[in-house]
Length: 229
Figure 1 (cartoon, rainbow, N blue to C red):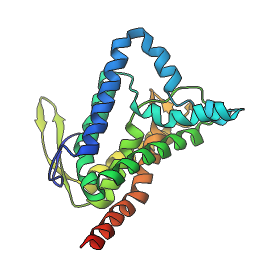
Figure 2 (figure 1 turned 180 degrees about the vertical axis):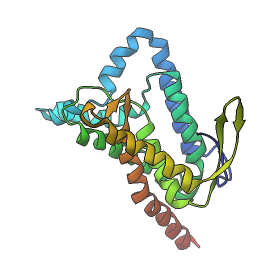
Figure 3 (figure 1 turned 90 degrees about the vertical axis):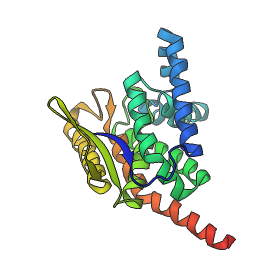
Figure 4 (figure 1 turned 45 degrees about the vertical axis):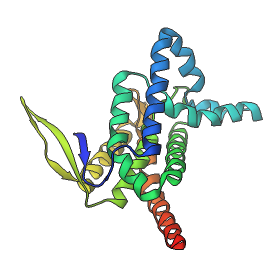
């Protein structure tokens, strides 16, 4: 299912969401320019669970903690970055409109960090670097799920040689998305949380963070507006 539009955002280019998309695309363009040299960049700034859990000095721990953020702006391929940015472009604006720009920025990074910590918790000894914005974006999806359950998501569904574009209720679309991530994470079993290059538990952790925290960010904005009247 490929989302192409939602029913709730009154504008598509909200400031923080647009800036996040631009930053991710700019970093990926830099990776592409480096060519094979990008391997060193990814190795240094990717989140490696074992580097965080096995840090022996304060400096090593600080470097490992910093990768919880830096890894959110790295991607491994064109499809990886474009897929993530599509979801952020579709679901991010409505969430930013409900939370406000400043709260949305804080929420986005907090969701990404929570998703990274979920991966570390599930594979504390892994030396596989984790990259991508999908954990933070999963937090945005979780917030959308609770803030806009009655929204409609126009979706592309391939049916043989035809493309069907139904409007799917957001609660159905996002529950199906989350169920797929959870199933994949559980099915990975002994193979670990990074099967096929996908950090499934980052998606699960980010989504649950968004479900839990998203409404509080929106409520906080509403209280602020009442005080200004």
